[in-house]
Image 1: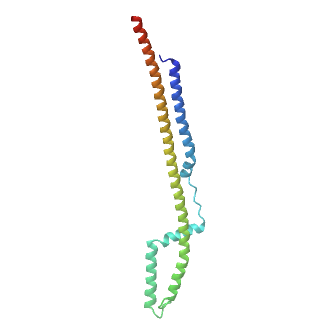
Image 2 (image 1 turned 90 degrees about the vertical axis):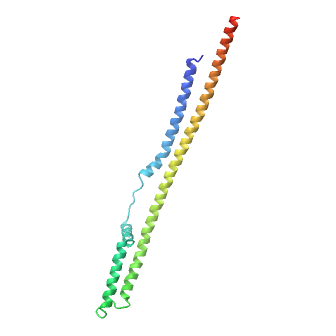
Image 3 (image 1 turned 60 degrees about the vertical axis):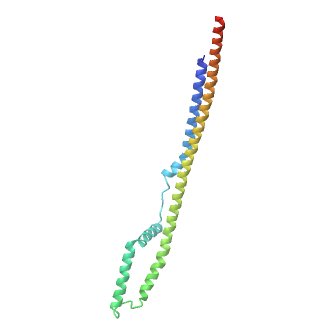
Length: 185
């Protein structure tokens, strides 16, 4: 029959199995620490004064508010200088207005480009965070595969060990039955 040594052996195997599972979990936690740290504590964005100004100019220059104000300003400019042909400061063909428009476009374009470059850098950082999240998910999947593989391996081993012990018990029972039947004859 099964004695205490065999029961202790089974319990020790199960404890070893649990220790392996704990090791997998601890290894996974250690591997994810860097990823989680980067995701939870992204580096602070430090803006220079020029970057801050370029962001504000780009935000305003690309808004409906700017377009409406600019159209109103140009309309007032053209109407005033057309109505007051002799008293206007910029008679038709509005050379001063063209100069001002060219000046605004010449300054606004590089400022908006600076802001777009900064936005591109933000997008790159966002993509890196997405990559880290995907990497974390992949590590979780690998960890789950390891756990499942370990569980299957340990269950198969336990199943084979149990069947071997049951086989031994059956042989002992058969031997006792054969001994009991030979005593009766």
